[in-house]
Length: 569
Ligand SMILES: [Zn+2]
Ligand SMILES: [Zn+2]
Image 1 (cartoon, rainbow, N blue to C red):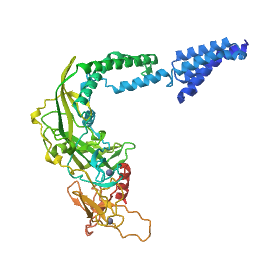
Image 2: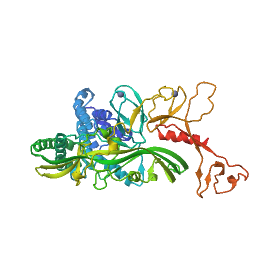
Image 3: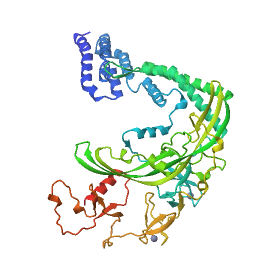
Image 4: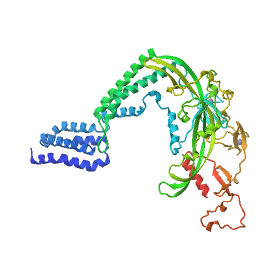
């Protein structure tokens, strides 16, 4: 062994580790690079991965000893086993490690299981999430929409139509249709998963299996999972991959035991008296227009913002019995006309009136469309576009079995047990109101043709008025009937290549803080200094007009920008 080799053996590994820690660590290198580096010089890869110093020192010492044992460049093949050890060492600290992969799967599983509830039957329904949102100071508004099945007038298929759309395409026969009936109250129902006693029994068995599984999981798996990720004194989270394999095995065992429990329970579970019924909810959806004056959160500049958003609200129409809240319809499958329901299905009577729904929309100023502005003054206007009564199907079932003796409420649309059943008197149940039984009411299709010349309108599901490109008439639909709508236009230009852009025209009626009604913008005074308020006494009062684009961009920000430009120029 030459003295040069000894010096290299001692100095190269620590030098490489120091360089890796200072140069590579900040760049968060890819796992492959870490593994290769640690194979060439054990310790350097660990340093680049940001492992604890003691571990890096162990890697460096291992590299030094390996190099000394190799003894010189002529025997470098003897270094190969050390490279394998170095590579594997680094591998287990990267995301490529088989242990880390199984850990990720378990982590995913843990997230899906609610930690806090003590019984699966208290599992929060998706609807509670939307309720808690209203308890925040401000609500963030998310665009929502839901679908209703409409019978195709050409082929009879049930076509799911987003409820705010005014045109629909039937994918079964390829036909296009105008959708009418938005101004009527829609009578709809949620499609059922639990449609008979057999499915009910299976859903209950699933429920008790899950409850059993959760209990076992908390006892056998959760303590291990808690130890697998520990916090260091500095607050960083450290994964302990050696525990992950144990967690995987425990989870599999718990799952198997729960399956055994379910098959045993299937022989002993007795489902007693059941009640299959509906409860009505009032549901509304519409457009919120908001003007916000305030300061930009970025640079504190004063801003005036206009925003548009779709909002929805729902309220139970049964005051006497407490049923779970509705939640957002947009998360559910397409709703069906209530007229499709079997006449044997009875419902809790429809109570209250539309005022309950108006209340459910809450304080419009608390629904903030623009989040990036600290509002000083907010103006909100809401237009309801769709009002519906939604009948939601339920089961109440008496269940007996080993350690089970309870009466549960099961959400028949979701197929899951919600909790202990409320007291429902079966003699109070009634048939659906006559209006809900009428087929052909609510959303329905009418032909796409212009009522005057028969030309087909261009397909645009968001359009509320339809322009005929043949006879240049504008067609609207009221109470299911098409009718011409008067509109003005500038003289058609001589040269070709013009696009038509529709606008709404509004006469200005501006109510000032001191109660004055202005129709002429020049007469709006700032009240601070008189410089801009001098317009002269003999200037005649004019009627200003505002032009608002009658188009809707998918992106509300673009829409507001377009509006602001026209507003200013
Ligand atoms: Zn069709
Ligand atoms: Zn026409």
